Structures are given as structure tokens and as C-alpha cells.
Image (cartoon, rainbow, N blue to C red):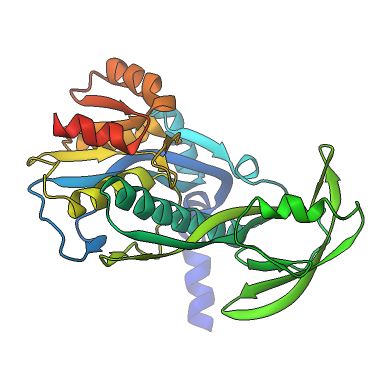
Length: 329
């Protein structure tokens, strides 16, 4: 112990400086910083029974974000990195990182379901949708309920649900303030719960925001192998395009590296995403031959291409069929 005290007395200046460096480098500020993007090949992330081979590759575009520290926050002004307040990223003060990540996983599951359905339908492959699965995506902070994010609603007021729109019809029979029984699935176990009807923007609602997944069967087996650290909906379109290519004889890649971004719905419509300038940067650094973007992001992508002097072919798509037609030509 005496030696320790002697060391501290002799080296206290060094210890203070070291502590300051650690504090500055490790202390988290209430910001996320977007520092760039990259690409992820879908080659090993999907399997289709009796699939056709491809000579090129389909790739997701992603954004890299880090939690801000003092050094990275200052560097964001030097390198023009985008900053987002943690508070702005949340839906309200009732939200927390666990809920936010659970929501990202649900978005990924929705994207995967829609990608499979849209690809199989376009390829005219057998797929049978048994029912819609209504999962809770978000619980409003003022809601009176014991339901949680990720719960699957099986029935409301004794009525079994097969489609999302059935909920509105059920609530028409009740008044604001009524307590409604809910039967739901949580962690593979059926439970009973409730919610109290509220008036939100002039309508009778539960304050529960739902996401629609699907229970389906395919004649040709399909499996998606995304990592546990991956989430979000923006890879849905490219996943659907890659599945379609495995289902059909004509290889759309023709040896090219194809990168893209965009959400997808079960009808094959491509939707808007965020962070397109970073995803474009990742596509360029990954030496992509084609970069697909949704209609809503197209003008921004062209502007960034011109400002940065990128040499890449940017293609706007509204639907999965748009991308297939472009690649076939």
C-alpha cells in the first residue's frame, strides 16, 4: 500500500492527464454520428430450394453510425459527418434503447416477409398466405394497457384477427374509455391482456401502433440468414430482388455488382429510406456497377453524385418490376 501511495504522489500529473484523456475519449454525448456507409453481399444471407446461380452479386447499402464522444463530435464538423440528437431519434421520453432495437428487428422481419412475398409473386412461384400477424410496434406513453412491443395480437374482444383492418370494425362497437379484452402471444405463450379506448385525432384508438407480418407457405423452400446485429427495413427491396433472381433462370446480375436500398411491401412497391448520401458513398467505395434508389431519394442521390464527382450509374425504381426490367435490358 505504501508503494502505491508513493507512486501516486510521484506520478500524479501523469495520472490526472490519463484520466482526462479517458474521460474525453469515452464520455458519451447525447448524439449519434453518421460517419459513412458500405455494402453487404446477400450471397450468404439467403437460400432458395433448387436455386439458380448468379455470376455477379446483389448487395445491401448500409450506414455506419457511432455514439458521439467529444473527439468524434468535433471531428464531425471537420469531415461533415451528420449528427442526430438521441432525443430527436426517440418517439418520446417513454422510449428506451431496448424498445428501439426491438422495433428495428420487427422492421427487418416485416421487410423479409414482404421481400419473399413480392419476389415469389413476381416470379409466379407458389406461395400461400395463411394470415396476417399483427405485432405491436409501439405503445404510446399515455396508453392504458399491459401489452408490450413484440406481442402478437390474436383476438380483440373475443374476435379472432386475420387482417389489420378488422380492428377498426371491432372498435366501432365500443366507446372512449371502454376497457377491451385482448388475447395475445408473448414469448410463444398465450396471455390475456387489455387496453382502454382513447380518442386520438378524433378517432377511437388504443394508442398501440402495429406492424403487419405474414404467416405463409412456399412450395420452394426459402431461408434468410441475417445477423442478430442487423435490423431495419431499408434492405427489403434488394433482398426481394436477390430472391427473385434465385427463383428464375435468367441471371439478372450478368457479372455485375448491384447495390441498392429501399423498403418493400408485399405488392412489390419500393419505399423511401434515410441516409442515402452515405449509402451512395458506400456503393461508390464498393465499386458498384449499379446503384438502385427509391423515387423519393433519387434527386438527392443525383445531387450528391454531382457534388462528389462520383462515377456510378444511379437508377430510380418505384417497384421491384422496375429493377427487373432495367437489369434485363
